Amino acid sequence: MRKQFLTLTVLMLATASAAADRMNPADLRRVTKAREHIIPAVAKEFGPRARFVHLFGQGKGMLAGVVAEVPAEPLGTDDVPLLAIVQYDEDTGAVRVVDREFKYREARTVGRDVALLDGEGNLRLREANGRERLLAQGVGGDLFPTAKGDALVATLIMDGQHAHETSVGLIDLKGRVKVLADGPGVDATPSISPDGRTVVFVSGRTTVASFYVTTVDGGAPRQLTNVGLDSTMLFGGPPKGFVPPPVSSHHMEWVSEDVLRYNAGGGEFWKLNVRTGEAAPDLGGEK
Image 1 (cartoon, helix red, strand yellow):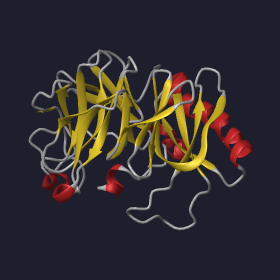
Image 2 (cartoon, one colour):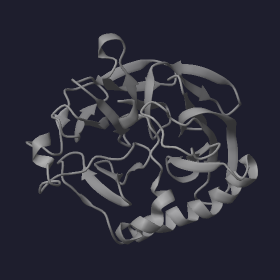
Image 3 (cartoon, helix red, strand yellow):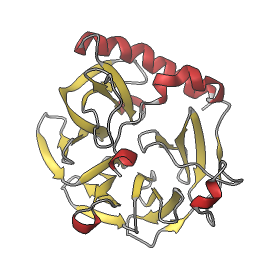
């Protein structure tokens, strides 16, 4: 589970040239601009061995994770490189250091504050005035803040006999945690709609990673994609109608109250209507 949902996937920024032929032109411009500003800033602030390997979020509040150096050997299942965190303003290109210590899994902007998840699953909130406080423990990752910046959804790690399972929860800024989805196996990669009512997540409860939808009130989850498919149908390649899951929650954005846009890997973005389940690649045109 840790490898599937916690290991940092090197963002398409590192492989943009290979995927450029499949990318929306607007996405390619964003990737190129990010590289041009973040790479030299990271080298200046952290030294020539440091590399930025992940972006968290979109726009002015975008954060980037930095490793001290790229490991010479492939990492094991539970070996996740810890990150320092910088902030990248997509509009101006400005880069500033948020935390120089290499001790984080993820980070997201929440309103004017920054949520920081360390390697032990402790989620802390660093307020704009510099004060920091513990929000929650046992957090697996996949942080996604509400549009209002008053809470965030995340993947939670189960304890005890269900240690290899995860659930999806809502964490408010007072540290209260509410479990929204806890089916058999892994529920993860949540995102919350702009109106703060609808939560979309990915589950493998049918043996095929599929999108599900629920509400912040914890209504019974409804399967949106890959309905009727099971893992045996994927042998030999994805069948007709298969909708790929997102590579992470960090490259999801809502283009309307009902439509979620997400990175499906390989440089490709998809759009998903969370009311109807209709999904399709978003490969061209302006964003």
